[in-house]
Length: 266
Image (cartoon, rainbow, N blue to C red; front, side):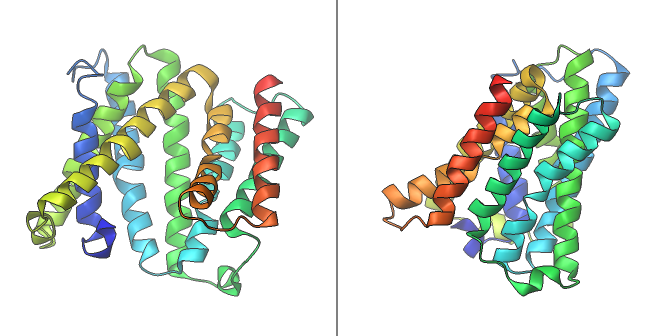
């Protein structure tokens, strides 16, 4: 994995820039915006979700354990739903929808922890606080992006392109100023291919489809669907790597799929 020998900030800046460039054809290479209001929203999602959140996450990961980080990243979904309900005018329709969301959250927790929880998660830790702050920033980003799509006809690919490019350029500048440029210039050809694949398939495509989902289905339903990602990780680990699936992971998969189906059909 590139993170084993590349500085996280340098790697993030490269991934964001490649991701933004790969979305240019889908955004029809258009950088123009129709109003100052659109510009303000793009600046907001870039600053919050394209720069602040990644920086908080990267520094948080350096100061906590992998198991704690895995648990804390579930906070994005919870924060997104809470903020959406309180401040952005979107909330579960009724108790059945709220129950479906609760089922998804519990299943997500089980899938990412396998019910093996470290006692360090309950201790005050700067790294944990930074990760939670990053999840809060992405939750704000999700809701602001949703608001942008409600009054503007801007394409999801264009939002992803602008946020990725501008965010990547800012992080690249920080990388250069802090003397980490050699981390990028020293990458070999095979690593560049791997990083490019991650940027296009794992980030650009995900961002574009995620924003499209927010635009057409709303923040809560999209976030609930997006949270099923661990299910694919569990399945791939079992089918490709031959890893054993635990009873908790099976239960988590059933719960998450059931909760999402109930939410979509409701």
